[in-house]
Image 1 (cartoon, one colour):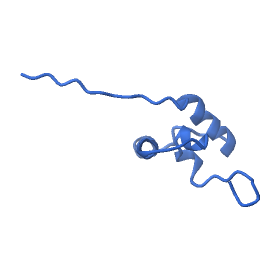
Image 2: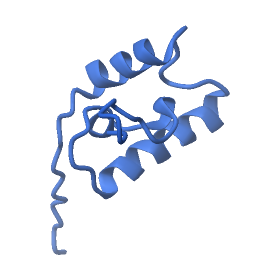
Image 3: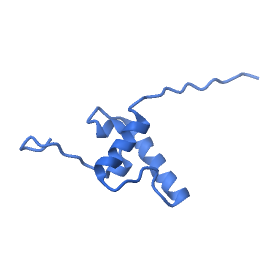
Image 4: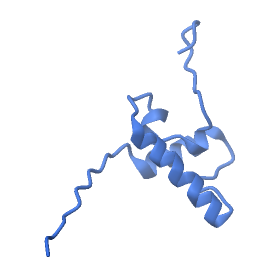
Length: 79
Protein backbone atom coordinates (compact mmCIF):
# COMPACT_ATOMS: atom_id res chain seq x y z
CA UNK A 1 0.00 0.00 0.00
CA UNK A 2 1.06 3.55 -0.65
CA UNK A 3 1.40 6.14 2.11
CA UNK A 4 -2.15 7.37 1.36
CA UNK A 5 -3.53 3.84 1.91
CA UNK A 6 -4.23 3.08 -1.74
CA UNK A 7 -3.18 -0.32 -3.12
CA UNK A 8 0.01 -0.34 -5.16
CA UNK A 9 1.19 -2.95 -7.65
CA UNK A 10 4.92 -3.19 -8.29
CA UNK A 11 5.70 -5.12 -11.46
CA UNK A 12 4.21 -6.01 -14.82
CA UNK A 13 0.86 -7.71 -14.20
CA UNK A 14 1.25 -9.92 -17.29
CA UNK A 15 4.21 -11.64 -15.62
CA UNK A 16 3.00 -11.68 -12.00
CA UNK A 17 2.09 -14.90 -10.22
CA UNK A 18 -1.44 -15.23 -8.81
CA UNK A 19 -0.24 -14.94 -5.21
CA UNK A 20 1.49 -11.63 -5.92
CA UNK A 21 -1.69 -10.27 -7.51
CA UNK A 22 -3.58 -11.33 -4.36
CA UNK A 23 -0.99 -9.54 -2.19
CA UNK A 24 -0.24 -12.89 -0.57
CA UNK A 25 3.24 -13.80 0.64
CA UNK A 26 5.42 -14.78 -2.29
CA UNK A 27 8.52 -16.92 -2.58
CA UNK A 28 10.73 -18.35 -5.34
CA UNK A 29 7.75 -20.06 -6.99
CA UNK A 30 6.53 -16.63 -8.14
CA UNK A 31 9.81 -16.26 -10.04
CA UNK A 32 9.28 -19.67 -11.62
CA UNK A 33 5.79 -18.60 -12.72
CA UNK A 34 7.26 -15.48 -14.34
CA UNK A 35 9.97 -17.53 -16.02
CA UNK A 36 7.25 -19.79 -17.43
CA UNK A 37 5.39 -16.77 -18.83
CA UNK A 38 8.57 -15.42 -20.44
CA UNK A 39 9.44 -18.87 -21.86
CA UNK A 40 5.94 -19.23 -23.30
CA UNK A 41 6.22 -15.80 -24.89
CA UNK A 42 9.64 -16.61 -26.39
CA UNK A 43 8.37 -19.85 -27.91
CA UNK A 44 4.98 -18.67 -29.19
CA UNK A 45 5.58 -14.94 -29.79
CA UNK A 46 2.54 -14.11 -27.64
CA UNK A 47 1.72 -13.86 -23.96
CA UNK A 48 -0.24 -16.67 -22.32
CA UNK A 49 -2.61 -14.15 -20.71
CA UNK A 50 -3.78 -11.36 -23.01
CA UNK A 51 -6.59 -8.90 -22.50
CA UNK A 52 -7.65 -5.33 -23.20
CA UNK A 53 -6.98 -4.14 -19.65
CA UNK A 54 -4.60 -4.82 -16.78
CA UNK A 55 -7.51 -5.76 -14.53
CA UNK A 56 -8.84 -8.47 -16.85
CA UNK A 57 -5.32 -9.80 -17.42
CA UNK A 58 -4.94 -10.15 -13.66
CA UNK A 59 -8.32 -11.87 -13.44
CA UNK A 60 -7.27 -14.37 -16.13
CA UNK A 61 -4.06 -15.18 -14.27
CA UNK A 62 -5.88 -15.62 -10.97
CA UNK A 63 -8.63 -17.80 -12.45
CA UNK A 64 -6.22 -20.12 -14.28
CA UNK A 65 -3.57 -20.24 -11.57
CA UNK A 66 -6.13 -20.10 -8.81
CA UNK A 67 -3.38 -19.50 -6.28
CA UNK A 68 -3.13 -23.28 -5.91
CA UNK A 69 0.26 -24.52 -4.86
CA UNK A 70 1.37 -27.87 -6.15
CA UNK A 71 4.02 -29.91 -4.43
CA UNK A 72 6.06 -32.20 -6.62
CA UNK A 73 8.09 -34.98 -5.10
CA UNK A 74 9.98 -36.99 -7.71
CA UNK A 75 10.08 -40.71 -7.23
CA UNK A 76 13.48 -42.24 -7.91
CA UNK A 77 13.92 -45.92 -8.52
CA UNK A 78 17.17 -47.61 -7.73
CA UNK A 79 18.41 -50.00 -10.36
